[in-house]
Length: 143
Image (tube, rainbow, N blue to C red; front, side, top):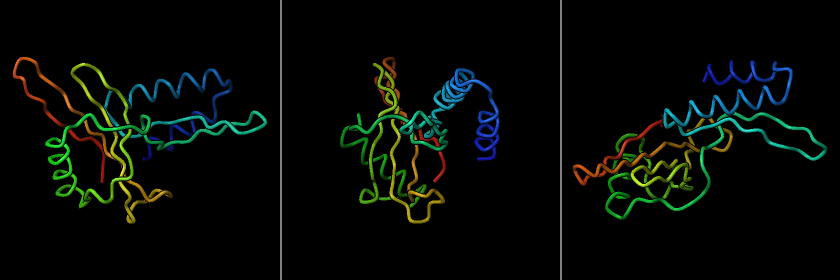
């Protein structure tokens, strides 16, 4: 979190919008490579003003690529690790779908969250290995 605050201060200090855009793109690329659930994003306002927001959930709202069996095991992991159940799921956000990689952010309603919107999101990464014909699932982020 301190890094995000430092980066926001640094980016606000940039003198050109193209320089700031490049820094945000670089930061978001690093976040994606780490399978982090959040990104930074410029929000445009009427009149040409914009604001840099940190902690924006990655991806776009969508439908999970996980079948019922994988969804059950994913919810089991969230239940054990974070105490979340199916009824708390707010949305699934699709970050990247490639032939052997599915990267999603699952966002949960969480009254204990420190975020203003009272949500918590974790990345769910499913990778298919054609050599073993198995799909492994990994989780990134904090409850």
